[in-house]
Image 1 (tube, helix red, strand yellow):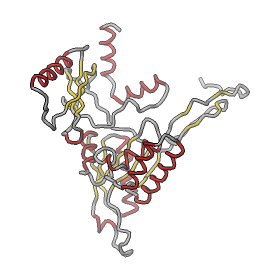
Image 2 (cartoon, one colour):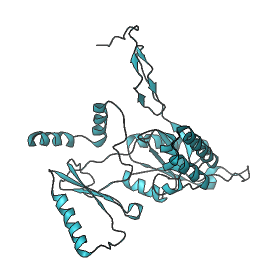
Image 3 (cartoon, helix red, strand yellow):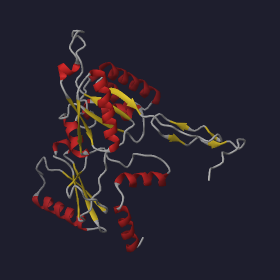
Length: 318
């Protein structure tokens, strides 16, 4: 691709938002996928309303602990960093991972163009709400929840899709419990940081995984080592930790599934998160298409699909 082609491509991409580009990639690949996405928050250091398109120059930094290397080594490493940032095609964007993780204030990404692009939020196949739970030993003649709890604020990450779900949840909660529910929409990065720190008491948050297996959901959401990451309820249970650790170390698929089911049973007993809704997927399949498996997570499995030659193909309108 020559320079003029690259310039034209950048101009075209600059006219699109991130979800549109992601959708185009999935169309080109012929499948839906999440392997190329980050679940960590990203903070753009430039104009918050800007849109950026460019070639990424990546680096990893750590500053919570002072370096113990000889001064000459530190100086050489820093010069190598600046040289690497200065190299490569343009326009360039510096994408820096903060290796200190939760000990850091936030990740930054800064480039040499005044253009920026942000996503509205993560996609999710299932949603959970985290909040206070009722005392099972309390008197059954308690006053209405609104008198005990008072108005509550449901926090969510901004976006039409996320806002519609939050509005429906608030309506259901208000109708069922008689609570006054306020809304607070936040940008994705500060919202995720606040939820992971435990600063947000009542929120709607959804996410998905690349490969939908029990392990991929249970470990991030309920292992105590993931508090501060995707264990948003800050759930900690020694039995669950032990079962999930055993499952990760077990090569036998059947034994691993037994351990994961036992861990799930224990989680459902403790109920740190309440399953609220599951998205409905409507599928239209032509009669000649056979053995098409469409999972509850909305994924198509095409490895065993075949077309029955004895079935008359459905005419395509138009």
